[in-house]
Image 1 (cartoon, rainbow, N blue to C red):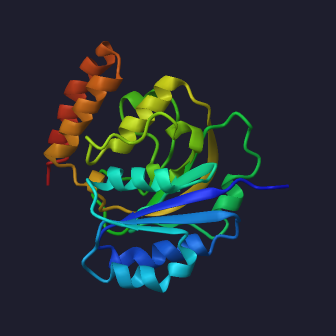
Image 2: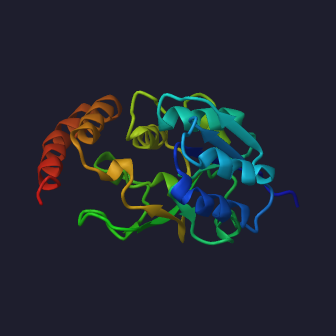
Length: 243
């Protein structure tokens, strides 16, 4: 039986310290077929040298400046051809070599989103859990319950909409709210899909993060739900500024 092609999109900019581990976690997967699309925003560290070392394993290498991480991801999606799309950060890694084997076993035909958990690694703030447990419910109105590195997206989800590059930090959250509103079929797997750095951009809890959350929720949520969100977002911001 022919198995669906997985397109792995790996955006990177000056990620030399962690890139080898990310690449190895992809190339060591037992699942086939996989294509690897790397989008390098013209890194100035050792990233280009590392990518050339692994060039045989990279299906497509896009090297050009971009308008932020979601622009880079969109470029990778447009270049890809897989039925399923997975996005891995350069400072993250798949949890084991059989992740895709396990995740794509027994998937319902109507499923358009497969999700699992993500474990955080490294030093983290007290507000960051050790494991991000994915959920697909109205909880999404209040917080991003789906971690991007814990999700496989069916190609059809990007037919008309990609990540909004207006958002520099929470573009995935905006996209997830769009999918939830569209009522797409999601399937949850009781498995940790990736290990992710706990110091990522969305874990810095700065003003830009919460301004983006307000902006995207204003666009995506019913007005009553949005109005209830505003004081909660403000409270989250204040709490996470405490020492």
